[in-house]
Length: 137
Image 1 (tube, rainbow, N blue to C red):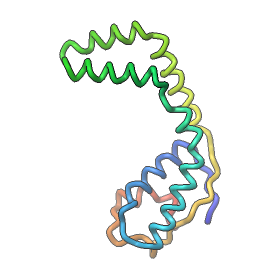
Image 2: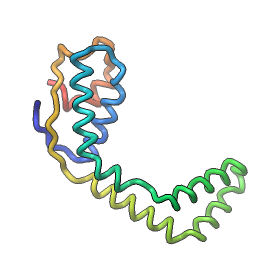
Image 3: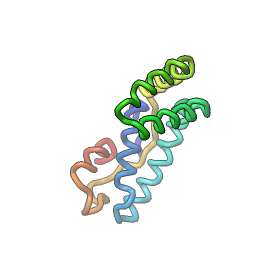
């Protein structure tokens, strides 16, 4: 275990990197990866909750998607009108996402399992290693 201080955004990227390797075969690797995923997910719980859209916004989003699917050419005008009619709701969502982005810049200290090169599965790719490089010694 090692204490790592990184931004919440970096922690989210690290989590995504772990998701990318979740199906690789190696018991020791899988165990450490699963523990790290749990620790990171817990550390990012506040961001996840903060970023959830309201039911009203989700309804508006579904309407926008339906308009674009129905008529991609003229849909933009209809979407713009719908957004204007729901200006306050759209602005609330933008503000919410700005706050999420601010919180992603905050640092977090995580106790994570470090992977030795020996524990890495043979089929791991360079791209996957690059995403996990902070956890490899």
